[in-house]
Amino acid sequence: MCVTAHPDDECFAFGGALALAAEQGVETYVICFTAGQAASHRGDAASPEELGRTRRAEFEASCKVLGVSRYEVLDYQDGQLEFAGFSHAAGRLVEKMRAYKPHVVLTFSSDGAVNTHADHTMVSAFTCAAYHWAASPKRYPELGEIHHAERLYLLTTSFFMEGRPAPMPAPWTVTLDIQHLMERKQEAFRQHASQRPLMEQTKGMFAQFGQAEHYLLAAVREPQPAEQQTSFFDGLKD
Image (cartoon, rainbow, N blue to C red; front, top):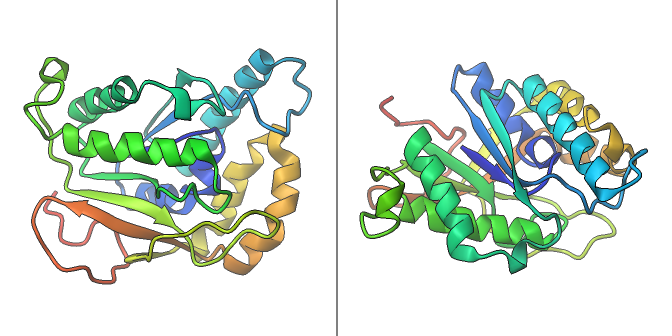
């Protein structure tokens, strides 16, 4: 399960991981909190509502390119997640985790990613709480049987984005080699036609740094020392 904030996060941030999982026959589920109605790049949309509809369709097309098994966009307002009710937002994720029963959960780190977006930080907080609360019989007992996901991974970075405030990133414990999937990741990004200016702005960045994605293993079911890995799934039984 991968939890994001905006349409295009699934490819811009997590595209390599999702495409690699699909290539390995792993079922994936992407949950996006907003429809991206407040984006700076608006394409031909005449209103936030129209932009939201456009970006939902772009998100669906991108997920299909990446081989995502299941995907949905929630109804939160873009740019306003810091004001959302925390318990309710986390509870929605708890319910979905208990129903879907993921082995692995992915989301942003608390720094807000390379563009230090507050929505990314909030999605990280919601997801981290939900990861732990989905396994607790004391939390949301009305939302289904508890589920212990095996691992929680947070996206981090080995570079900073030019022209943006530098984040304070987490040290990575996982490096995914996605060089052979770069074209698929870029094709998924091209589905977000409304965000074409962003594609042009970041083209050089992906050419230089896009051959790998980096993640921090943030939580597990059993105590263990940190170690460097090249897969989310090493050692998992199923």
